Amino acid sequence: MPRPTTPAHDAEGTAPSRRASRTRPGPRAGRSAPAPRTPRRPSDEIHTSRGDHESTELAPGDYGLFGPGSATWQLMGEPILWVAGIRALYLQALDPKTMFGTWQNSALVHRHEAWARFLRTTEFVRTRTYGTTAEAERAGRRVRKVHASLTGTDTDGTVFRLDDSEQLLWVHCAEVDSYVNICRRCGIGAGPGQLDAFVDEQRHSAALVGLDPAEVPASVAELDAYYADTRHRARAVAEAKKSLLMTFNPPVPPALLPLKLVAPPVNTLAFAALPRWARKLYGAPGSPVTDVATTAALRGLYQASRVVPVRLRYSPAVRHARQIMREHERHQDAAP
Image (cartoon, rainbow, N blue to C red; front, top):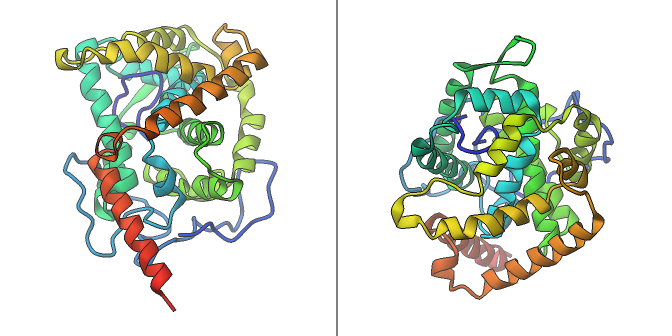
């Protein structure tokens, strides 16, 4: 993915037929890619892509990787999920190799470049979520090309590739787990079935960066099992702690200096939303009291966002997607 600006790699139909819940992640023999939710969906597995910065205008019937019937479109547009994105960065940074590779190859130490990197990251997420199939594929192709060209060096001198599947899976799961966590806690109204569908749909996103969808968690239970199996390798290296602190004083253009006032409280909330084991690795308390207070704060922030006018609350891409979802629902209601 493009060189990140914060702790880790930055970028990055109806629910599928129900599977018996798995308790262990890993290879899933015979598993198919996520089931399509809408007609004229892209191929079940995406293997090529590259991002651009053009505005998204969906061709008739081309809803990209997801579409109006997807849990992804239903959830991803809410502003509260910016907290999830920051939480994901803090969680991603706890994999030492992921953090080393990011720190050694990114603009983290070049603050004048960081804002442009951040914009590229958000553009990738927008294109992946709301872009056409062709746009999403171009985005993924560029990300894979960048990752394939970069290497990192571990503490023992071992050189590793940034497109290593183990690291890519950690980054993917941290992002998806963060969206699920915030949706569960903020009062958005996402039920277990919708969250399972969201996790399953995000295997399309995983395929964009080069992962095999069959090897990626496809439900909340599988996501939880992934962390039960892999969190033993998590560690807050010095670079992770430094990058965490840097996010509280982000480099922004002069016209956006008010964002510096918003960053500390939002980032504090994102950090507090981490699992207890993750907060402890950073040297913070892992108190259940923090969890209760954080959930209350997330609910309050979500409710506050609901009073903001729609034209200000949502980006143009999200407003466009919401219009398509309304039309999709009307057609479904009118169908015999």
